[in-house]
Length: 344
Ligand SMILES: *Cc1c(COP(=O)(O)O)cnc(C)c1O
Image 1 (cartoon, rainbow, N blue to C red):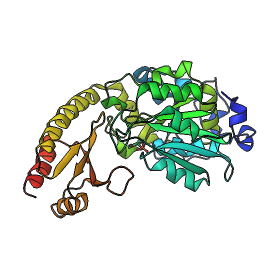
Image 2: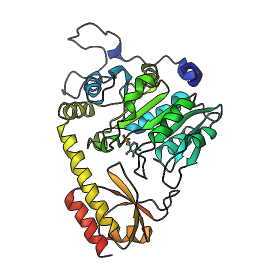
Image 3: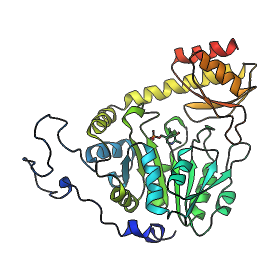
Image 4: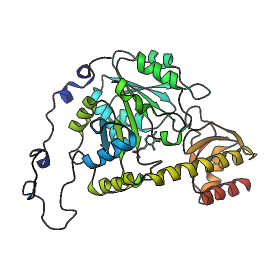
């Protein structure tokens, strides 16, 4: 692996970050806060939130099995995705490689940051060859994006191929594990200590049922997390979000219950889809959604919208011709979908 200094944009490596009022007196017990020009009234909203979210991170550390100093929290995973570009990729010079098809934000963020995006097509089973990904890289490739379980295909990417990429690449590999709570494999984040070039993304938006609070996370070496912390907005996670996350993390039993209900419903939905004459194929999935090849995705999508049922039409995505992506809902919602499709 290249050194972190070689991988980081020189302006970011040299950056002196903004120092917030609450960073500067650490170690002492404080009672009277006259330092940040806050209003002393209107509790509990009057104070700036903890810029490094220590309480949330302590709890996450226990739940995720990752040291608190190796956790970055962002306004959704999307903030972490953007920070990867802003910390490591020189606009107009560097490039990134990604599996294709995959989550759309890696490319949007590359375009915003003026970084060349090199998609590498998956095979017919939606798998990668490490060799093909590595061949797409050159000396200015800073990042390889892998999403597993992948969106929109739903399948987990072969672990041996992921490990070959991590072993064979001299820059950074991001593994987006947004859906790992639904997958049977042990998440890659547990290899963090052995893999200084890996960044793992997680989110509260899916299994944790908290898309509204916007809390995403990155797990990486404490040196990489230090760079993210330097570049992020000082108070990027608001107080309400931190409080809600703490509540949920203190009581994670709901999450386990939701995941097992959704996995049972997923099985039932997929079996029912396989019996539909308008469904040609359901692809294997390790996520809380599945991809189904239909006879005519556009017409079926429009038909469902007319009945107030929204699924995702992925027919224009590479390798996904005539595919709909179906998120698993409650038993009642899934029954509505099935009833509508049976009447199509
Ligand atoms: C939904 C999703 C996310 C979550 O993004 P947030 O900004 O945390 O809501 C991240 N990655 C993938 C692949 C997703 O599908």
